[in-house]
Image (cartoon, rainbow, N blue to C red; front, top):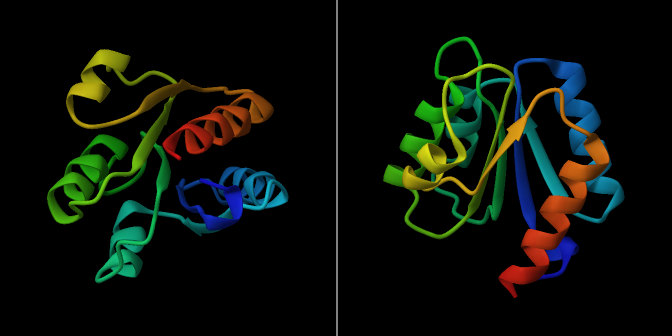
Length: 126
């Protein structure tokens, strides 16, 4: 899949982090929507299944990143990649993958490495 065909959802309660990540992905020609909470993202996604990648913070007020993944997997039946960004949540990459996630990203993350990882994963989707 080409980046300009790929819709990415960025969810982080820290506005600056969400903006920097979204802008970095946009510079690579991805279409990006950013949200400050999982609840806000779910409201916007209701009735839409045109997203391909979700990058979510793990620790957010209200619904956390793992709970968000669980709701997405229940409510949206299409395949999508899910990246969980965390600093100290007690979850392993294997735990995340068992729930349907794609990759665990340890905070603080290298922005360029994360963008490259997404680019590579999307290119491999076909």
